[in-house]
Image (cartoon, rainbow, N blue to C red; front, side, top):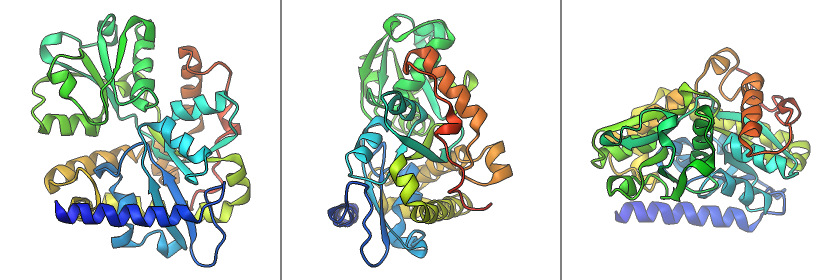
Length: 334
């Protein structure tokens, strides 16, 4: 525990030092490495190990990037932290991205982090909740109101002709299945890794409705402001190349990543569990599109389908033409 606390203090100090030199765009032009701060949707947890082992592996340093991380509680937080100048890049979900665009923010998606949908809705076996229509009238937990768990819950409800008004949404917190186990909610919207951890903590037999079986859209992508996209292309290209290198490493070396996560994450005390979490994220990083064009490649038809679905859900009010807000030109060559 002492080692973990020391590691987290080191990471926090490094992030604060990086933040201290930021301007409104989240990037400084001082001599030396270019500082890129990632606004995350979560605390520094195991599934983003590849972003947290910079001190050990130096993927970003090798590309002339000084990396920092700002935690959040959902994809909406990630975008807000970027827009307020606390970060350069938002690690966010498509629903939060579309919602910000709908409000008039000028943003660009530049890299598809997890092209596979990793969200689900989990209920105890005895609840008999096995399909989206069974959620009507139920209390359902989400990580936060600005998280992908809520957005993807709405996607599921839509499949059954339901809306948010047909359920009661309860904020339960990140990776927290206790309210479900204690009967405070009937079901919980989560991710595949959240479910894995919940099972390790004694969740027991559950029913799982996987969103990808109804709409397999990307779970997370990197987003920047239009101004950053237009003026910092070289820095962003190097950042994305470094991120891809870190992901290639984690895919090829899950055991090493699991061992490093013990000291670099807040929830990674168990190397065996770390490996399972990392393996799930490795799988979600690969799709037919990325296999053909390289990790991070953006599947425009899939994102257009997602944008159209979010408009039908009422999450956004206007049509979004994704070809205008997604950029492929910063991606490293395969």
